Every structure is written in C-alpha cells, then in structure tokens.
Amino acid sequence: MSDPTDRERVRELGVEFGPLAHQLNQHEYPTTCEELVEAYGSAVLGFQNGEQTLAEVLSPVPEEQFNSATEARAAIFSNVPEGAIGRKGYSDRTPPALGEQSEESDESF
Image (tube, helix red, strand yellow):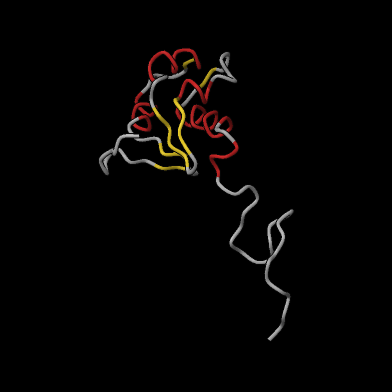
C-alpha cells in the first residue's frame, strides 16, 4: 500500500480508506455497488492484517444500492474479511469480553 499523505490518511473502524474516503464523500448518490466498483474498484483498503481492493470487499453485494456515502461505508465495514478486525472479541477492559478467557487471576487486594 502506498504511503498516503496526512490529508489522505483516513482510518475508520480499523479500515484505512486513504483517498477513497474523499471520493466516496464526493460521489453522486444514489448509486449502485456496480457504479462504485466501476469508478473506484481498484482503490485499496488497508486493514490491520492486510489489504483488499474495493471491488474485492464489495463483491458479495453486487446488487446493493446506496443512498449516501454513509451507506456505502457501512457495506464496506460489513464485508471486510474477518481477519481485518484483529483479535475477534478482544477487549482491553475488564471483565473479559463475552467468550474471551482472562489470563489474570481474580485476586482482590
């Protein structure tokens, strides 16, 4: 992934959009998934554990229609690969997240 300038660096919910964030905001809505892929399909989305093009991320929903950039981003967040989010179910808060085992004992001071 190329090193975008600070102006282009847009990370939201663990997804690095780069210049695509601005392009989605400026796109004319309503639009279809097909139109977004045609216009920006080769744009690369970065994740904690890799990257994919917009075309790859939106491939499961080719018939989707979006009324806003917010809806388009929601479809992207819904279709990123599971590994993109890091440790599934992770929380740095106590008590452990549902389904997560605590490695610390339950001592009281």
